[in-house]
Amino acid sequence: MAHPALKSKLEADVEIQAPPEQFYHMLVSYKLRDVQHTCNDKIQRCDLQQGEWGKVGTVIDWSYVHDGETKVAKDVIEVMDPDKHLITFRVIEGDVLKEHKSFSLSLQASPKSGGSGSIVHLTLEYERLHDGIAHPETLLQLLADLTKDIDAHLPQSN
Image (cartoon, rainbow, N blue to C red; front, top):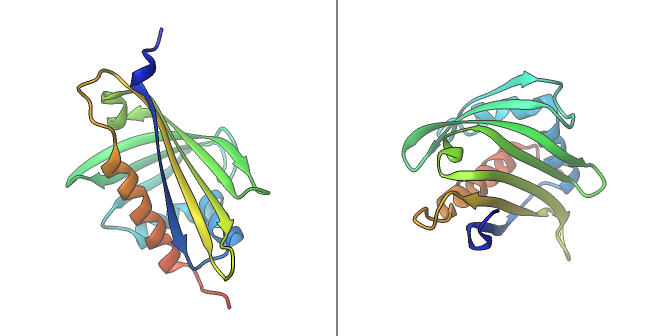
């Protein structure tokens, strides 16, 4: 049985200029592979391993830089909700699972109230293997930085 204190969630909101639809479309389309070109200091590789871009069940293989080290992850898309501009990835292989029994990340873009742009809500849900493992705050910051980098490379609409 899982120890309740080892299951955790970290959340953050990132303000971006792009509308929710545009940001979501980048995440669910074949354009996701372009992340490695727009954020090459953070993402080294993003390859389709199984399935189709933008489909639940699709498996994506990543190579990324976290805390100065190259890491790998294989994620499966678990949830896609175009009405809510929500996508959830679950890590099924890779470095993060060396310290976590389970790990998922969600991104949800919502219209910014009182203006153009969006707020992207980032959620990491995970279960650490033991109490000695730190919460992945730096991974949440990496995801926030990636969100800003992706936004900076999206065409801006007025």
